[in-house]
Image (cartoon, rainbow, N blue to C red; front, side, top):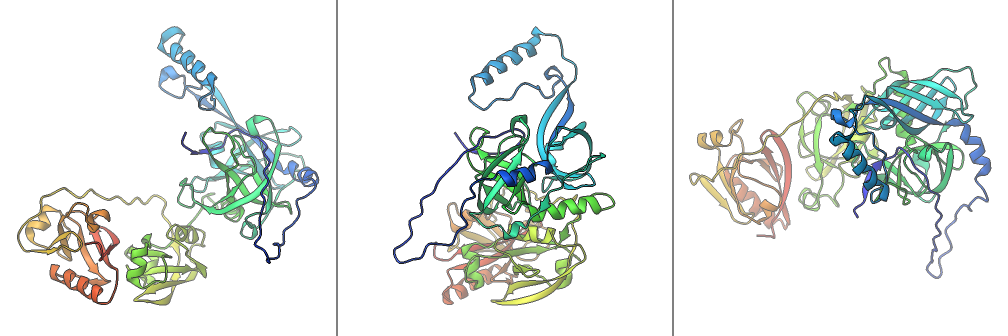
Length: 497
């Protein structure tokens, strides 16, 4: 059975685990905080700030082509097949067509301000017609959505009440260390407030749920219904929002993920304070790609790190500040860029209009530029057209057998054949199957604009650059390739002819 990442809308099973550490002889044991005798005092203090969230939405009957509303059971459950047969039989006409009905879902959240602001996951309240916040003393309050941010899965609700609300305090997720004790409080299976304990298992997890993934991982039991609930440190500060689990069955197996509090705090603060309750993200105006071993070697980097700039937007913040295609961004606003996926998060979290230092790797040395961060337009979409499959032309060709490429200067025939926008660079007219070029995804119709970060004007120049790279003892050569307006750097090995 394959594992899957799933959003949480109901859950909870408490598990315990022990780990035996064997230290090498002669090394002192690492200093560690002892496990608390009990979490009872801390849980008693924190429970009043955690709420249950009940949402109601109108769904149409299955006969009308919408959601079925059938009960959900873990995959493989005997009830799953029984109810499937029952509902399928009714759908075939053995019962009257149903009317639209109400469907209820349960999640969790926590109060961040006595004025009535509640934070939860966006997916907990998405598509809801009615939202009810249930306090620890079972008080039911109608709530309205103040603001939401689907890209980070954070939402803020507003409730009105004369009751004195107990607000949770934000903790500093950056200071939380792997191995620290944590408490997760939520509403598993709609049972009400429930507490589980565990440790912080890992940091900076990317589960491919969005462009700004930076999750904390924990083994504290998190199940469906815990979504939107807080994860506390031992000082009682919120360091995360329970959001997803990794599981083969939909139940907890000790791999849960939480949005870091430092990100959630910033997003929720902006959702509350912004006049339109919309998050404004920073924008750099670059298209980036990962730095592979081959690219790092060809650029003279000690190891793969940073984000390689493939292209810059016209008149964007990057171009205005002097960032160029081929630069590797090593740090942004004093924070290291460990890999390509790290940069978008750093930029998005930066205030619009703020000028920050950006360190780039250019021509085998570091250079620092000052960049005024712009505002990201969330509606912008970048599309790439498929390169048409064409047979290679045999005129004006220069064959590079080392890399499995057949190249040609741009001709009117090739320009028309491959729908090229201009006459710059060198056209790839054929790629040898199973060659290094084919393995890297090069196709007929691609245009090589640069080799070793120098502009290419003829097919013969590519051959010369390959020879120069070999003489210099380099194992790869860096090419800047354009495909229907999309620029990308590709490093080809020179020792795999």
